[in-house]
Length: 301
Image: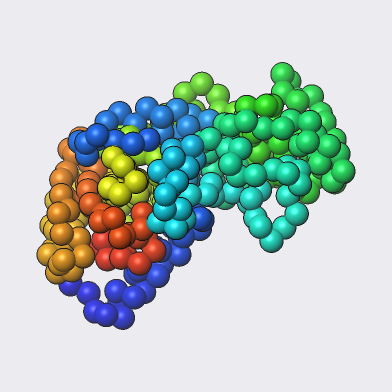
């Protein structure tokens, strides 16, 4: 793929802007693409009709462990992507709520599901002071604002689900059997391609782009050894073959930036192009959408 400097900047900006919205802030022993069961389990908490939105997954407990000695290195990918954690707006979860209470999170721009250790009493008190009331919806106890503004939530001491949908809000985080993001063919293909990751960011792309879903995952054997895995679900084998060649060319053209990258194609009804990019100890995880955007740009082109 040969593009001008101006086209490069435009392409990088477009895709990076989309993905930076989900990058705000699981170790793996190999890069051969494990089942991604923890990731698939998290995707199972979101309804499949959110597949048109950006989605992020974070094993926050693993990131805290990895970043003990070097928090700055992991700062760009260490936070869940959630409006509930907006530092510029008053939080609904209580004055003493801290991100460290979250062990894992899966979020879109308007809904999400967290696991961790939460102070349910403090959250209840905070919601009441913000004018929220509790309603029974089937077997769910949902907190919502009587004026219909803001998010709706349900929570316990170990789980929080929230949604900002206008109608039937909790349907976003209570998928019916067989209708979650884990059941979505493209998301499942991407998750299985990413393997065992502590962070994953998914960005659906629309036609005429032959890439249907772009995903970036972070793996780490140790705090000093991070690997970034790019997975592109494409429309057919012809598109996969072309993207494979374009990615290989970008790796070569940008040497030594992406040296050591392995590009492969996983064939099937919906092929996946996979690029495994090793980081050095000096490089921050998430660099492929923060600074070194050429591989993303290749897929966006």
